[in-house]
Amino acid sequence: MKWPTNGSLTPTARLKRRVDMWVVKLRVMPKLVRVQRMTRKWGSCSTAGTVTLAVDLDDQSDGFQDFVIAHELLHLKVPNHGRLFKALMTTHVPDWRSQDIWRRRRRPSRIPT
Image (cartoon, rainbow, N blue to C red):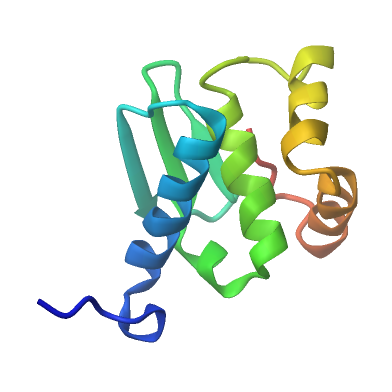
C-alpha cells in the first residue's frame, strides 16, 4: 500500500499527523483529537482530555502550528498557564513567546487555551 504524500492529505489529516508527532515528544495521550471550524480560538483542551484544533490552523506556518499544538497538549499535564506550564513551553517550543505575540497581533480574539 502506498501512503499519501503530505500534499494529498486533507487539512485535518495533516494536523492530526502533526499532533501525533507532538504526542510522542511530550509523552501525553489525549482521549480525542478533533479538527473543526473555530471562530474564536486556534485550539482548546478540555478537562476530559479532548484536544480541539481550528481547521484553518493548517494554513499557518509550521512554527505557529507547533506552538498551538504543544500548548494544547501540555494542558493535559498542566491545566493552567502558571510557571510550570511556561517552563514546559520554553523547553519544547523555545520561541513560543514570539509566536504568542504574533497570535495577538494577527487575531487578538483567537487565544489558545
